[in-house]
Image (tube, rainbow, N blue to C red):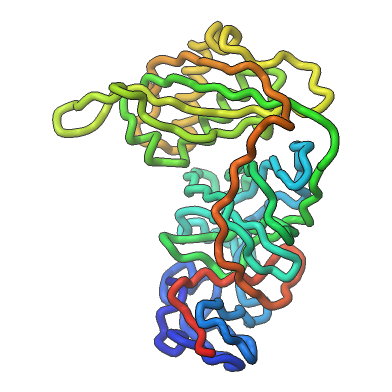
Amino acid sequence: MAVTDATCAAIAAGVTKTCKPSNGLATECLGSSASWSCPANNMDVTRKPDFVTPAGVKCKPCNATATVNDINPQADQIWATLEWGPLVDYEGVSKEAFVDGYAIKIVDSKGRILENVGEAKKVPSSSSCCKPNLYSISIAGLLPTGYDKFMIVPMIGNTELPMGHLTATITDLSAGAGQTVDGTLNLAVTDTDAIINNKAAWNPIRDALAEQLSDIDNSQVRIVGITVAPGGRRLDGRRLAAGTLLVNWQILLPEGFTGAVPTAAAINANAAALKTAINAKLVAAGIPGAANMVTGVTATVAAPQSVGNATAPVFTPSVAFRSSPMPVGLVAALALSWLTMLS
């Protein structure tokens, strides 16, 4: 929790309270105290209070996506890639040591969180410089009613800061046509758990696949899910180790795409290079034992489908949080699930 002060265990309607941050991330980015307020006449005891400390969060990514480029031509659906760098304070001092990931939200024009749409695990970096694309995530799915922007929120464990980086307004492409290509990589690996239980390993696989498909950018690729193949895991002593992973992926080919459509034959013809690229990117991402983790790759690819026939994933709705007005690039969004307000 970002705040454990008993003062904020409950906040009555029309009342503002000042609370003490409890962990390193909150202390580094909020300071010694911060204030929350319950709106007057509130009758919903489950409603989250507003974060009301002006410029209260003093940390942000050193660089982050501003414009959101939607490449899905279907109305009310999004396919976009967000990129950002490590966390720093307003003086440029790194605070990345205090995070273990980032939560991605869609918020409305008043900063209320509409949906939680993704999470990026911490990516290790040996450089103290700002790497603008240290983090990357592809978001695809139905846009919630009232959508306005994406928000990137630093987190540690289950704690999220009450503010995050706010992108520019999402512009829904909502015109044109395209195709989706669905496929599966069968990865023979030395340790299934090192990948399937660590989402920091997913983007390296996405990026390696995009690189091997010369006409495809990684913003067009998303990893849908990774599972262990039936009978594809064996015991090594007392530890689950070598086995086969099924990496399900999807590629979107926008209207006007003139490159080579991905096929199983094309991917399998370069399987050795793909294996090498995946291992190299897993090492760069700091995945333990990744140097030769992938020992074999084969691919299966379905026939392209028109985007109009594709079914977009529906995000799991989350509680809408109200937030106080914030400057462009920042928005208030309280994520302290145990705070309640008394009507």
